[in-house]
Amino acid sequence: METTHLNKKQRLEKNQNCHFDDLPDDLIISILCNLASSASSPSDFLTVLSTCKRLNRLALNPLVLSKAGTRTVAVTAENWSDSSQRFLKLCSNAGSADACYALGMIRFYCLEKKRNGAALLAKAAIRSHAPALYALGVIQFNGSGGSKSDKNLRAGVALCSRSASIGYIDALRELGHCLQDGYGCPRNVTEGRRYLIQANAREVACTLRSFLSIKEGEMTFPVKEIHPVNRFLKDWFGPGGVKLSEGLTMCSHDGCGRPETRANEFRRCSVCGTVNYCSRGCQALDWRVKHKVDCTRLTDLWLAQVAAEIGEELPPEYNEDVENIFAQR
Ligand SMILES: [Zn+2]
Ligand SMILES: [Zn+2]
View 1 (cartoon, protein in one colour):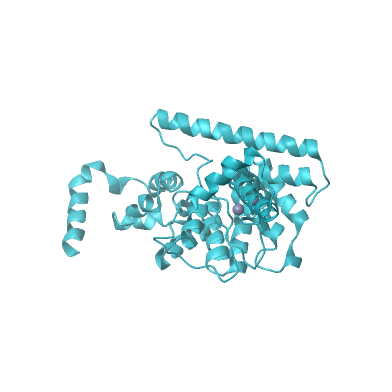
View 2 (cartoon, protein in one colour):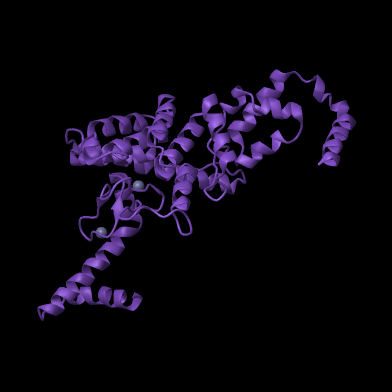
C-alpha cells in the first residue's frame, strides 16, 4: 500500500508540468460536477476518489455529489453493501434527485424502511424528478406500505399527471388508462386516448433515438431501457435473491420489479388470474408485449378441458393452440 501511495505521489510530482496543483478548486469542482452527472457507472466516478487526496476531497464536495446522475448512482443488487448505501446517502443529502429516487425505492421496497423511503421519493419529487413522481403515484394507487383503506386514487392521478407533464412515458400511459376507465378521475375516453397516443409516440421516438445513437457509436442512456432502479428491484427479489414473504408477488411486467407490500395488493388479470400488476400501465404494456398470447392460450386450454368434461368438441381454430400448449407442458 505504502509503495502504491508513494508511486502516485511520485507520478504527481513528475507531472508537475501539468500544474495540477496550480488549478483553482472551482475549476476542478466544475469538471467533477460534469463527471458526476455523466459517469456511466458508480465505479466510473468512485475511481476519482482514490486518485489523490485533493481529488478525493473535492469529489466529495456537496456541490459535486448533488449532480450525481442516474448511472452514477446505479448501484446493483449484487454489489449492494453498507458503503454503497453510504454513497447514495451522501449524494441524496447533497441534493441529487436521482440518488434520492434510487435510495428511496430501495429503502421502501427492499429494506422495509417505508417511511424513510417514501420521504426520499418525496424529496426527489419536489425537485420534479419524473420517475419519483410516478413512483409515489403507484404507491398512492395501491396504498403500498399500508392497508387497502390507505389507497388514494385522486392523489395517484395527481402525481401521475405531474410526472406526465414532464413527459414521463409510464405516467402518460397510466394517466391515459385512468382517464379511459374513470379510475381516480372523471371518465374522459378522448383525453385518455390522447395520453396513450403521446406515450406510444414518445416510446417510438426513444427507441429510434437509442438506435441512432448506437449507430453513430455514441451510446447514450435510452429512456425506454429498463431503469437501473427497476433492475435493482428485479435482481433483489429475483432467483438467488431475497425471498418475498408468503403470499406476496412481484409485478408481472418484466421491466418493473415492484413487489407487493401486503397480500393481494396488486391487480390481477381478470381473464386468467395468473399474473399481477402494480399499475394499469404495467398491465397494458405487458399485455401488448407478452401476456396477450399467454392469456389466450390459457383460456383456450381451460375451454378445451371444459369441453372434454361436457363431451363437446372445440371448433377447429382452438385445436392448434391447445395442442401447442400440451406440447409445451
Ligand atoms: Zn391473463
Ligand atoms: Zn409494475
